[in-house]
Figure (cartoon, helix red, strand yellow):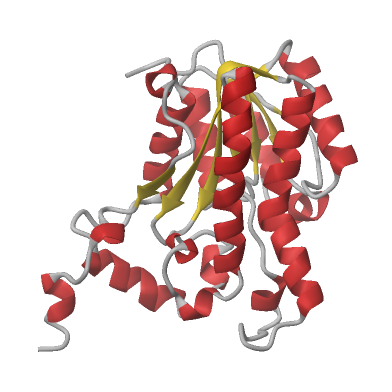
Length: 268
């Protein structure tokens, strides 16, 4: 289907380079007729290639630290100015663990790092929705999506405190999603994506081995970043107007598997 997002306006957080899921979402949203503002933290923008994506999609960039209420208020106000009206969709694709980056084990973290991690990865989602909600910045039947991972429900030892961050993120989506739906007819969901070789994903210890394991465990194989973008676009579209408060597994079936033939063959 074409033009699923024709006439819709949005904000996309977190695109860093062509490996980012947010980057793929921006490309797909542009293909489907949407207009949007791109945003990332200033330090991430210096590391990434956001200017190229902006040029490709005809978008403007508004830098914002998603942990700063002042920055988020500026982002939302400027986005409405640039786009000429209220917002129809928002993607929150933000996650970071300082403990992982610094090699601190889950059983012996530095708690200042822990606090920074959940502020960036989860509380930033609450802050973003706070600004959108209180400024009445979203159109009715708008859609807000955040990206998560199944470590919020199951143990993946090397995912470290990012597992806690994702559990917090999913809870915020449900809790704030209730009020956003009740008061403004806006839907809020999270997508629990397959392990994906993004810049953030490949920073997790043992990632290559795990992505191979997930591929063998999933009956449909791992979902790619491009696959996730397609799914995200469906949630931004009017085809999913009554889907809200959901954590939606997009993982080739991995989340419902106990064991697969391909994995069992390794042990027999």
